[in-house]
Image 1 (cartoon, rainbow, N blue to C red):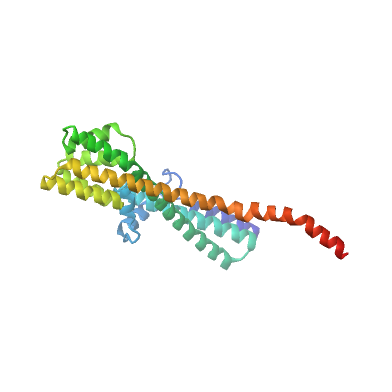
Image 2 (image 1 turned 135 degrees about the horizontal axis):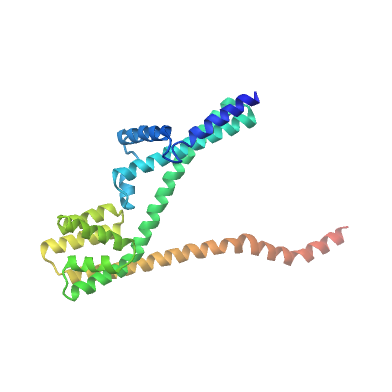
Length: 270
């Protein structure tokens, strides 16, 4: 029986890790080919392509590679769990259940990690937005065109929003109009603040409205939103700091204050 379990372990564990490690073995290449084919045919119900595009990884290869990782880690977790539970518990039903559970858990955890990365990047962009829009306002007020101002920020600034401006500049250099590349940036970055700024900038550019006034209003609004965001974060931090005070320090202080009285009462009762 132990020999059979050992053979099962030697077969199942490498099979689970085939997709995750290396490209040198023919079986790995075949597994990757099958997964690529299924990933291309499968529907994007979780909007994975749009989320990867927001991170700057919107190509089909990035989508397929992420799916390969997701399926690979799920298969590896399932194979490892199945083997360990089968060896330790000698229960095939429990081993199948744990393998399915860990496989789904690995799949979901990778998806949640991607969502966290997107949320973190969006917060970075919104925190950089007031300073960038002020730089854009100063450049346009100095007499530069919107395209030259965006190019200056893309070359001189450092941050996630500057990288988005670099994508805008690359799109314009490839032959696309500026308003289309800006609109694509607004659709790519799922932020209400960026979307409103892009819409106002595109509308002002197409209609010939004074850009400095439009950008100045958005700069003031961006500073106000940043101040509200900082105040909200400070309020949450204040509440989190009260938790150890209320549930740890305050009960200990009350216990120290009441302990002599309780001791005396016990002594009188005895």
